[in-house]
Length: 342
Ligand code: AHM
Ligand code: MG
Image (cartoon, rainbow, N blue to C red; front, side, top):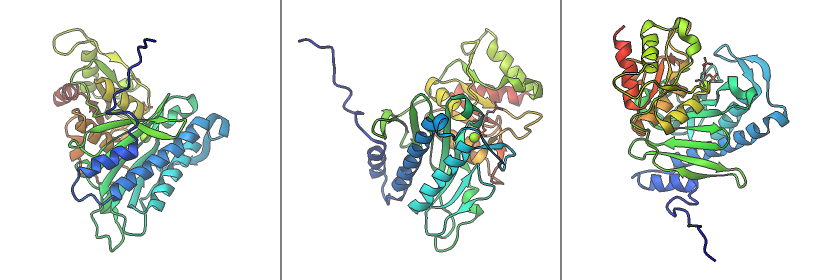
């Protein structure tokens, strides 16, 4: 009998996240296995969180705990659960000396000789939890700077994004994906969770952001508080005319992970600019902006605060905020062109 079935591309079939990380690290002379082990731990924690997200409505973990976190926001049960899960798993794993989390006022130092520092937003997109809309986790990994014979300190955590060794994110959406990069040399790779066996498989090899696209992702409800240059930029995106294909279409979820993931796949621009209320922007440098900036640059895109490269911003405090413009290189340059006219 004739069949139209073709074997899938044998280059990607059945490659687990673990196997892929091991392959990549084999290309890295001097790799000791510590970094690989830390990525496995993050992958395990992501699966644990995913299983809770999937059961959330049934398991009674939706809703607020009644507490307020260090950002002054109400803490939801899934935020706490994700925070505890990631921190417990990496503490036990022994590869990190410090964890900076959106949910913790201070750095969580881990006794021992862990070589790495983890920055993490354990559950991003809190406002979407109760609505069954995509949420996520964002993480960055740095090498420790202090001597491993002594305790780690804040200097280990306050490193610029250009010092990141790796960064990644997990989208808990219709399917769950983990995307990570160990830098431009290694590329950006995406893995989709097969929930029937609890394994992440390579599904998006060597992700590259399209050079041009006509989609913008911005919370326009902030219009009245924006600088005039931001309003002019949005007006320009909506008009027909010379240059990139305009008008742009709008897409905005309100979960950075979902908006940035779509922008990475389809191209265009995501922006959370400064405004009169959020004078330094809303998003956090260490565990939101830097990991995405690292990934977008490794995928051929750009990340800016409107004037500076995000990865060059020297962090001064743990929960520092920054304006963030992420996307196809040309689209980010357009934002900067308007910002420069101010
Ligand atoms: P969170 O970390 O508390 O979830 O806040 C960050 C979120 C981002 O995911 C998203 O890009 C942004 O806040 C949405 O903000 P807004 O609701 O002001 O559009
Ligand atoms: Mg967040």
